Image (cartoon, rainbow, N blue to C red; front, side, top):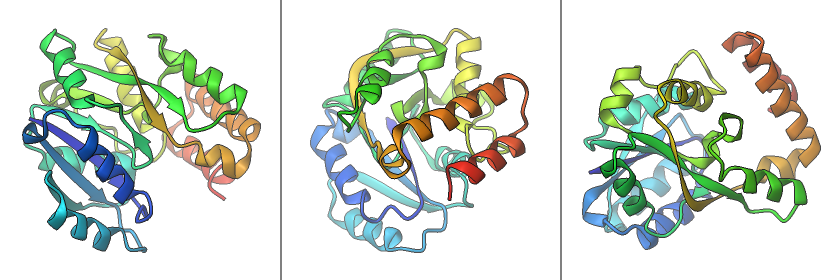
Length: 234
């Protein structure tokens, strides 16, 4: 069983498209469950999820959580029954037969990994950044590429570090790279460039790079969040 954990906050608009995409592109529908973990949405996310739950052929659970993606993903994992956990953002759309690709990698002894990524943008820099995600370099990783991990390894690591409100994906990825337990599936997941569209490609890239450098030089979770809120969460 693969448990797909989707943390959401005010994603009423995106959620129907994502769940239809998962339904249409899964190869092993009888071996999937989806956990939609709501962090206190103030829009129609909960009602939309409930409606889809009654109509979808997939097994969908809707879970309430404290706000914060790390907390939401840990809550989803705690409610999941699968031996493989697959963490997916609400604006990222995995490739056809994504679940089969994940199951095959795990069967071959790869306990964790992601897909290479393609932004839904034709901007040359985002196209280049997307192309670089095919490589196994640590600097090319991010949560938008989604994350699969065996339940056993996830529990061994201790899940996501909930002290990080942002950068939580990277903290887990650092643990996986330190254990030499990461593989990149060479099929693209399509991820939204909506933040780049909203603030501008160079502005967002500059501040994401600063966050990466700040963490490299030892900034705390609180310092990273303060910087993010000042520049990228206006």
